[in-house]
Image 1 (tube, rainbow, N blue to C red):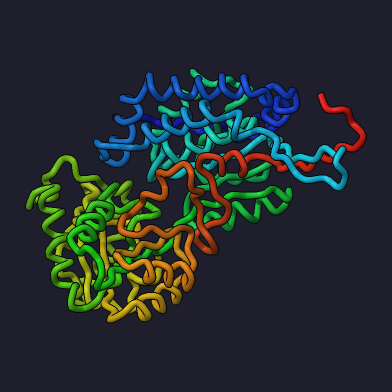
Image 2 (image 1 turned 180 degrees about the horizontal axis):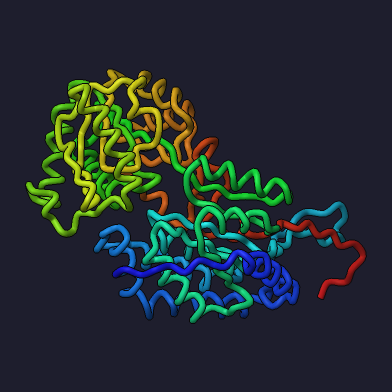
Length: 443
């Protein structure tokens, strides 16, 4: 699948945003039934075109098995089934018995959702579902890097969604820069910290609130009380999912030195079981998104190769955008590989003799989006919860916190601000409006 993405003409961008803002003021999006109609339309889009969306994702990232579309379906169904409860007034205590006080969740207005390329469906349509559930309208900017998916999304959203509720802007730097000069009521951005600063600076000119879903170096702490086989299999699976291009995957591992050899063996065994001994020849093994990202990872590999730190893997091929799953040992915190998020299938292992040292290392690096620990000792988990900072903490698994709609998903510090998923999306895309009624007869 090779499609050319048509960029939005620059002259149209201010008109699109003004049209969205004007149409929000007709109040159509506020009724719960209208919100459900839009969510049902989005649900039909997903269910009737799941195959086409999965094909587009495969064309961009060579992912054949995927949870993006199913995750969006679950989100739509969650909001449809729980909308009354999620949006009802929240009672508050007054000064007098006759006072009627409550918090009303009011739509913010026109929301800008800026998607990213590594999960080009889920990280656009899941936020959109929350925007619609909260009663807003939305301008969507898909990532132009995942060109095939952006093209399909553009056509399907225009076909299924109300044109006064969902708007689309396509383009690269020039189009995005002009788009960010426009006024929105909230901006939701998923991506890297460098662009997030640009988004935040643009939003500040209009005092527009932002939700920034970023990333960081997510550590995995393995203690002497871990189920090592379970830890190895989980880390191995997540490190190659989407070819490591996941913001909450394991970035590096912290483990006792005496466990390192067995951990490496079991990670390699898991990869061999998944893809065979010739991983490059395996058609189901994902690929890096483009040459730019491949060249970035190639520099990482060259750096650790020059220091003889690779114990498995290390091969790559720019023409096929292939990077082999790679394990790196004898890693120092001063090494280049530890200075920024890897975002690829390269796994550094840092040895540390105890939990004290692991916690010190975690705290020496910017707060990650997720922190993982493998142990059967609750007191070790409690120490991590007390003595570190991260967007989330998961014990004895990876990534499960993202899929639970009852938990907020978001970062802290350099890994982001704000959160979403489930009720937290409705909260994020709503104004919590205080209402104080005195001497008013209740209906």
